[in-house]
Image 1: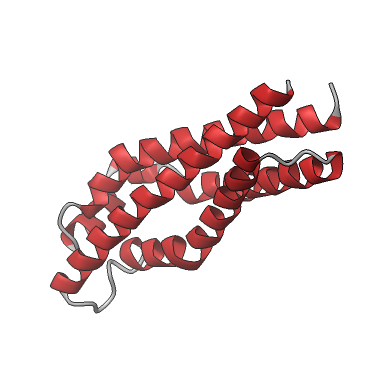
Image 2: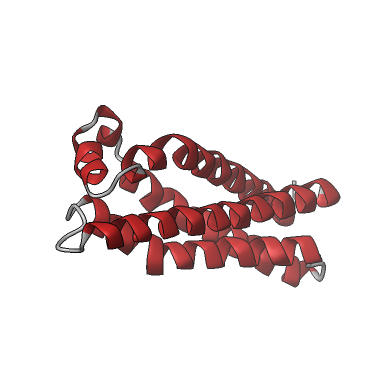
Length: 157
């Protein structure tokens, strides 16, 4: 197995893992804390589902996902064969993780660890709805990333 094939396989596995985890969170975890802020923020923190160490999972998986996407793109450039699906895929993985670090992570920390802080209830509800909507866009980016990773892996072998 060549270096290019190995990197593509790693990226495809990471993209699959991130897509599955993102869908699980969006369907199971996010509704548990977002249904009626700020009460649902506090209720979620005390619920059994919140005892999962979600930040620890993402702290290791997110960088590996972005780095494997970037690595696959760099190795494709080095091999002289960066395809459009792989280019778009890598861009989605890196920008999705960057967006997470800049917006999603700080906002969810404020929601859950600070219970929304001193933010008025209506504003918290609006911010939670926006977070959920933007998260679905982020999940779409992960799906594009997954598609591109699989397509590149199948095309290369």
